[in-house]
Length: 353
Image (cartoon, rainbow, N blue to C red):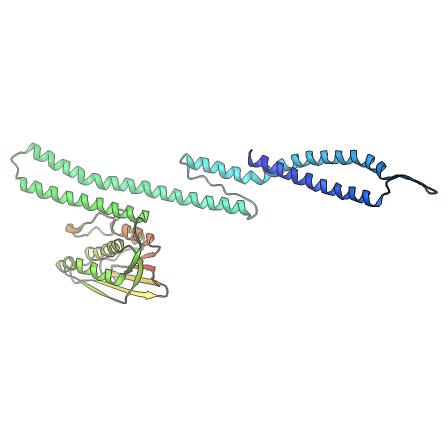
């Protein structure tokens, strides 16, 4: 049976029970206060209990029949009115199942349980639509980025096939560079997918130690390009994936180094504890950037400046991976330009109590 039919029968049954109870009260009243036999008095004839029962029983039966019909008709109408929002929600669900995520229920009326359900469903559709658009854009960008090294590789092989006397050393060197870039892009995509799916084990970690580890790893790169890296701060205990948090910190430091001044540039990294959060701040010198450009840096395949060191051009996923890792750890990420040039990146994570 449908929910509407069940509610209709429930309404009718409830109305029948209420009517039967009311008639039972009247019946008990007759049995208690009316004499069993008719009595003739000087004022006239007083009917007895049997006379009243014979007169009352048909009327009571017709009353129950009327209550049954009225309960079924009224219950069907009321159930239809009550379940109308569910019909709209079901229609929206069927549309969403076909891939149409732009439809919204927009249920009117008072703020009852059905309204809350419809609003929650609309919010879910909005998030799904945004996520679907982001995934489509990411897939298109990833396909484009992966196609570039493959196309370069194919071109180099075609040139080598047409010119067999060409020095193979140059070809091998260029193929190795293209292959390294393709591997870096693939690894970045896997890291990004892992962070978005939150497929990692949480454990207690010290963010300040992770900063020192990342700074030590990238110190040769900083010294090669004349960049000064300074680390400071307090112990910053949090809970999360050591590997992902190390990847996040390494990406921030790497970006701060390669997007820096050609000479006498600096990177400042510090950790601290504020109330119930651990805070990681990475500041670097560099070109003056507009807020509109900075707001797009955490999007996949977005590169901040045209002047990037050729040997560390990156794949455009550094800050996108940072953003996904921060979100996977239920944290907050803020990227702001500095007036003198460069960026300030602030990461807030939950402190381990």
